[in-house]
Amino acid sequence: MSKHLMERIDEIIEIKSLLKHPFYQAWTMGTLPLSSLERYAEQYFHFEAAYPTFLSGLHHRCADPSIRQMILDNLWDEEHGDENHIELWLRFCDRLGLDRSSMLNGKMVAATANLINSYRDMTSSGSIASGAAALYAFESQVPAVAKEKIDGLGRFYGIEDERSVSFFRVHQILDEAHSSTEREMVGSLAKKEDAYEEVVETVDRAVTILWEFLDGVYQA
Picture (tube, one colour):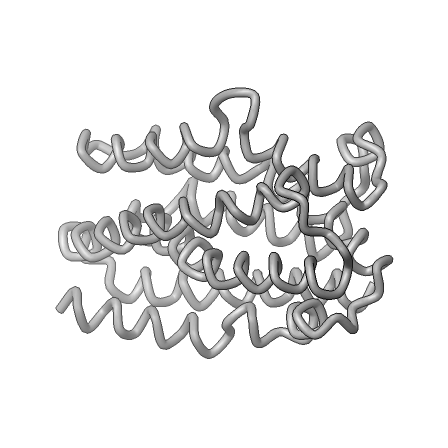
């Protein structure tokens, strides 16, 4: 049953794959204006800054110590050390010429706020399985997206130094492991929590919200 569930989940994600969105297609073809890339960097910062709290929202509610350890490993990767993921994103923003203080105090557009609020809700309420599924809906796509972003930045925008693309390079590797772990979590917990339909609904909500975030940035 869990195999069938994961097949359903992957089908939903594929339908609204981030790489199919016009924003990322323009990025990978070099037709995205630099101003749009800067706008995206400013808005995505808020999501990246909030992402550890989504993991915390699951971690503190989970009764299974082995599952908590999986979540904690992901949270550690996000926040630990001088090269935490927020810092890596800010290094990309540095390369775009964006001011760090402006980033930290920047205003979110409605689509960004909706993305963050939705992810916070999906990971702080409902079943642990559905929360893990929300993370999987995003992180399972990241390695392929990161690869295309690195390629596009180098070919079309002259951004290819390791400091500037380190955020994408790290996520291209780490999110292979993170999404594999989340896949395992979802398959195991959905059965225990009898949360199959909730998981499917959450994944559909997650990919829709992610798509709408890109809509908001692209239209702006």
